[in-house]
Image 1 (cartoon, helix red, strand yellow):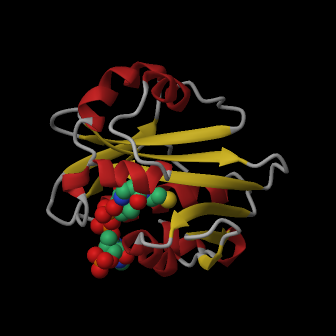
Image 2 (cartoon, rainbow, N blue to C red):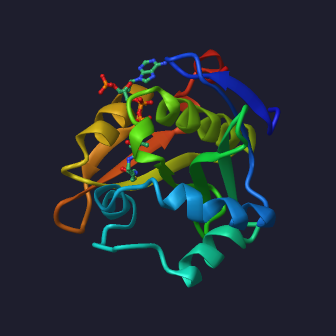
Length: 176
Ligand SMILES: CC(C)(COP(=O)(O)OP(=O)(O)OC[C@H]1O[C@@H](n2cnc3c(N)ncnc32)[C@H](O)[C@@H]1OP(=O)(O)O)[C@@H](O)C(=O)NCCC(=O)NCCS
């Protein structure tokens, strides 16, 4: 799989995906300034006014042996539009994903394309599943996960759903 991929959103906007690199720290303040508190809560499961510098540092300096993060970049401006990440579970066969994007861009098809990019990467790496925790109220994410083939179950944590995509159930043509 090509780690860099060019895509076009539903409204014609040109975007490319590439792995996140440490230099991208400079793009984060502008990115996070356009993420609403509600969306931060859906992503981090906690009310927060802003993401602390410590958390940003951890998000950027991930261990590439056990994790991967892809950024979506607006072609004309070079702005960071979204991030999807994948962290290996200790068994080395499964990985947990998380996704966040600029709030005003929701509904343009970017989340769907970022998820497919992450799934293609996971499948090519030979992982067995990608999994995630989604707040039960996050109907956009749960609908999207259902359409992408994830199995959705109650999590042990109240108000949270556990979503699992067995990668052997994903046909190769579905991610290209
Ligand atoms: C969840 C999130 C990533 C979704 O991204 P998004 O860009 O708004 O979603 P998209 O526009 O790609 O997809 C939304 C819709 O299009 C569908 N869709 C998009 N592209 C599609 C395609 N090519 N083919 C079929 N369906 C498609 C989705 O299923 C969904 O359907 P709906 O609009 O009828 O409800 C985004 O809302 C977000 O960042 N939320 C805040 C953080 C969060 O919730 N993170 C998840 C925590 S696990």
